[in-house]
Length: 407
Image (spheres, rainbow, N blue to C red):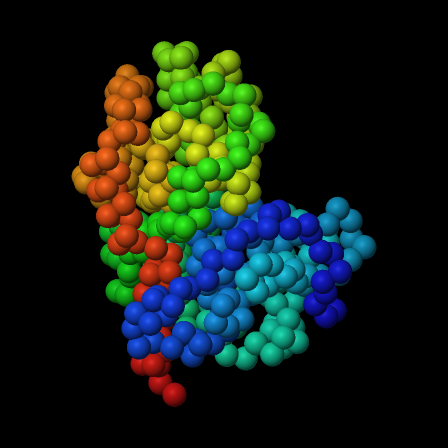
């Protein structure tokens, strides 16, 4: 069956279109348009949360075709045969989803074989002849290892094997991906320290920032209706609410400081919502679209990284750290290594490990809103990072490796 676009899902948000600025394009002699088509295999839905994959791949889509292959969609019946759905998204990215019948649910090998078959036909129908593979999940090898990319990139943004419900085969598949990969990029320095021991051509690319987008929080903006009635001081967090969030710390802080209002923005995933602390000064506002975040940030007094100390946070490099700072907000974080280095070491973000220390740090952060020296040092550091620069450096490495490939 040929690919189809007949089962179009609604777009979650009308995201701003990040494009590589001219200084990024001119930063080296690399010509990005020389890159082949790019096919990304991801475990995250494109429309879920706007984060690293969206920032990078939307930039690649400005200079070439980008196909974002999601996890399959299983129907509740056997009335359809395996087929491909293509969904057009902002920036020219095409989201590719394999639709599978109910009979293949739970049949991992058969489902992978069906996906491999429909992807092979899709590549032929779409004239995908020369292409780069870009992996976010090693598990995608089962449906793609038979294909022949001219370059393979593993953008390892998280230690997925440490997350809840990680597939048992993930570590073994990652070793296979290391053998296939020409380049390995990591989402932070701590992750780089681990992965560079397993691949000779690994490069750290920590979370970066769309300064113009989050800088809107420093300007006048309408207050979102669901936040307008919340009193100050407001202590905020945005991100996916999952096993990485220290819900015990949140509960302790809220109980110890009833004078503060805790605003939590993000979808609840992989944890029971009933386990979340519920007090009058904790406000769960749910998931928000990327373009809405600056308006919420503007209304906060302090932004936080309320991450737990567990296996799932050992290697993370939170994108929200520079996003909070670009919005002009003082930040308090638990001691996540990629936040301590460099933000804590540079005294740009306050670090605290216990509820008592975290509360004290928030009190200091509340005073930072009028600290012009802290704001100046923060802005000087933010000038050194951007998604445009990250994207261009990745392009340079990929172009070099392609040039070194035998004809």
